[in-house]
Length: 83
Image 1 (cartoon, one colour):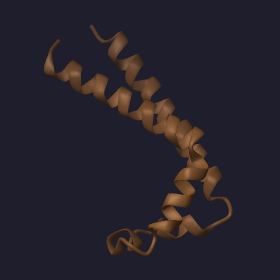
Image 2 (cartoon, rainbow, N blue to C red):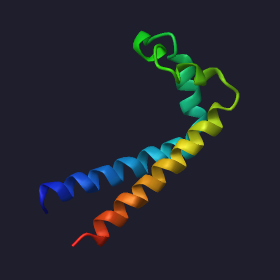
Image 3 (cartoon, helix red, strand yellow):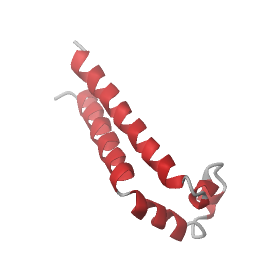
Image 4 (spheres, rainbow, N blue to C red):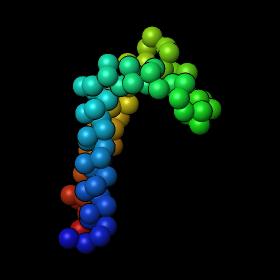
C-alpha cells in the first residue's frame, strides 16, 4: 500500500467512527460538552462554543454525524474510482 492510500483509508475510518459517535452517542457527547465547558478557556472563545447550552444541540450533533458519513462516502468514492 502506498502512503497516500494509507492517508485516504485513515480519513475514511476517522470520518466513519466520528460520525457513528455523533449519531449514536449523542447524549453522552452533550453531557461531556456541558460538563467540560468551563474547563477549557480556548474552546470558549470559538463562535460555536455556546451551542452546548442550546436545546437543539443534540440535533446539531446528529447532523454533523450525517455530514461526516457523507464525507466518508465521498472519500471512499474517490479512492475506488481513482486509477
